[in-house]
Image (cartoon, rainbow, N blue to C red; front, side, top):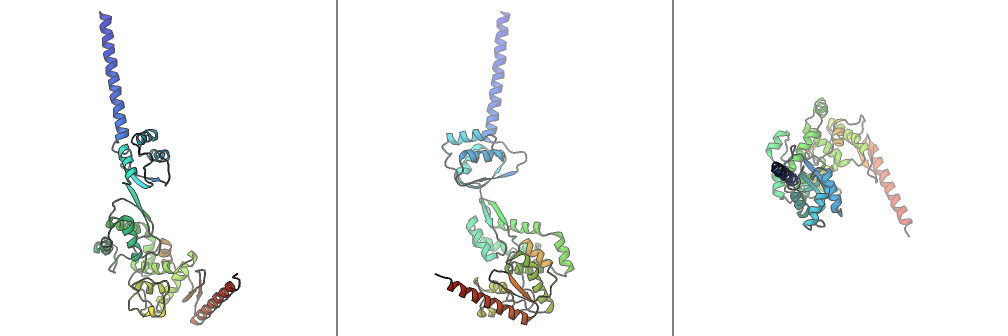
Length: 349
C-alpha cells in the first residue's frame, strides 16, 4: 500500500510539473505571438520591398527583433491566409510587437512610414505640395506651421515665414503624421545640422545666422558644380561690400507670383525687396532651403576679386572681375552656343 501511495504521489507531482511546463509554454507562446512590451521601447524600421515574399518579410522582421520567430510568424500568416496580402513599404514597429498586430499592419498598410524627400534648393512653394500629397495634410495646416511665431522667435527669423529653415533631407514619417510634426522635425534637423563653428564664423564676419542662410540659399540656387559654391559666394559678398546690387536671377524668380524657368527683362520690373536688380544688399531672407555645403560656402567665400559670372551650356560658370571682361565672356559663350547649334543641324540626317 505504501508503494502504491508513493506511485500516486509521484504521478501527482509529475502532473503538476507537466501542468506548470504547459502553462509556462503557453505563457511564452502568448508573449511571442501576442507580444510583450519592449523594455527599451525602441522603434524598429523595417523595409518590405515590392514583390518580397512572406519568408523575406518575416526574416527581416525577426532580424530587427520585431518578432521572435520568423517561422512562427510565417505559420500564423499562412493560417490566416495573409501570406500574399502584405503591402510593401517602410514600416515602424516597437520591438517584440504582437504577431497579430504586425501582420495586421502589413496587410492593411497601417504603420507605413511616409517618405518625404526635400531636395536642396526647394522653397515653400515646392515643399508644401509634397507634404500635402505624401502626408495627406491640408495646405492650410502647412501654412499655419510655417508661419508659427513661436518657431520664428526661437530661430530669430525676422521674416513672416520659415522659408529656408526646413532642412533638405530624406524624412520618414509614421502614417498619420501632422503638418506640424513634419515641419517641426525639419526645423529640429536644421538645428542639429547647424555647426557651432558656423556661429563663430558668422560672428567673425559680422553676420547674423539669417544673413548666412539668405546668402546660402542664393548660392544653392546658382551653383550647378559643387566646386563653384565658394566662387559664387565670393562674387555676391564682393558685390555686397561694394554696395552693388546682387542682380541674382533666383531672387527675381522667387519674387514672381509663379515660377519661371528663365528670367526675362519684363520680370526685372517686379516690385519686391527680393528683386535684387532693384534693391541693393541681401534680400529679406532665404529664397529656398540650402544644404550644408552651401551654408559652408556662404561662410567661407573664395579669396578672389570676381564680381560677375555667366553660365556655360553645361551649367558651370565663367567668372570675371570687370564688366568689360564679363561682356566679352557672355559674347564668347553665345558664339560657342550658336556654333554648336549650327554643327548639330549640319550633322542631322
